[in-house]
Image (cartoon, rainbow over all chains, first blue to last red; front, side, top):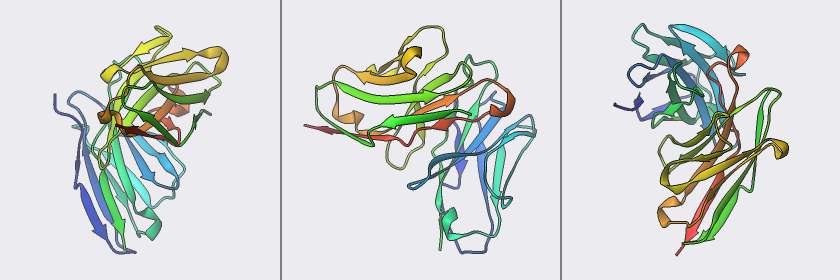
Length: 114
Length: 116
């Protein structure tokens, strides 16, 4: 099976712009979670989608949003970018049939805000 | 709410030596526990998982971890380190359902350095 894919891998944006990141889960996985990874804050949960519905959300401002499509692909959007949004954004997929809801991660999108 | 503490942000070992990375968790309900590894400029790779089926869990690349409820620990070990083990390791916890859907809570990570 192909793994989780994320596009683009690298992105440079200017403060105030918006950005959309894409994630394709492992075939058959219906849950997609997003995380932000920074040197200072580590790995922080953004939100999770299952069957096109957001089931859980982390403690991030409303500038961070996401959606999931009927084929389980997911996008996250960050509006009005700030310098502090520079990070590695990781998505992960999981299957409800797994015993521990373990998550499988993509390679990430490295976002740099200048 | 769940939390994870990884003791030691950096661990250095010689090639062939024992690897021990420490993880303590906090959870009010039975947890699922995981270890992930991250190589530079890559995503996280699942090493192993604890699901309550067995307290000693074996994973990939010769790693294993033991769940000790009394100590709320889930330490990662490998008998003999290899140069290719040099990476950052993350311990994570989750619980089933409720407000925890799809949420892994991670420790701060431990960077493992392996010396020849």
